[in-house]
Length: 253
Image 1: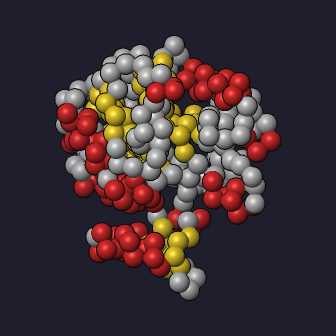
Image 2: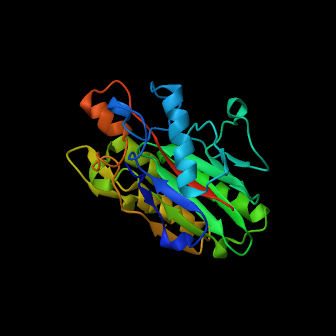
């Protein structure tokens, strides 16, 4: 089956893509394009899936990933990183050709960024913890340190859990509102004591607040679109023992 690659208009011709679960070699709960080494899928299948993902976006490039920990931490990548030594962080930036930055998700928001004039790219993993802590702010700052300009940066927020699928409790909502009362606008009323959180809109607001010039949202709900995307929350609700991860990629040819 052909790999699904969703591309953002905002990112133009830079090699990039938000990949789903189709087109890989994994089976069962991990079918098909599972790239998550933290899953119980076979190492051989994951390696093949990762190779297929890179070939779908920037053939011949070297994949770089980090050990994602829901932090605001960003790594400036100057060359290949050995998988065993990958740093604990949730975003990467680079200006080096031949590398493709990869972010793994299963409901969190993947964010890909590009300043075409400066030749600088970034990729961020924005779950609610990292987003609230400022992972996108730090990614923009790291790109600027490489010569980018915030107002020139284009950013695309990829498939993530949608507001209709993301129920949170009062304590969760309160945490965001204590950080900034204006964050109330990202929570819609739900059942008693609960709210529906719009993660993608929150991430977009943080990008705008950091001065990013163009922002695009890919309105795909990972929880609701089970045929296309892995979802941690959906797997949890179904009582499944494990779940796969999809990958979002951006590189410089």
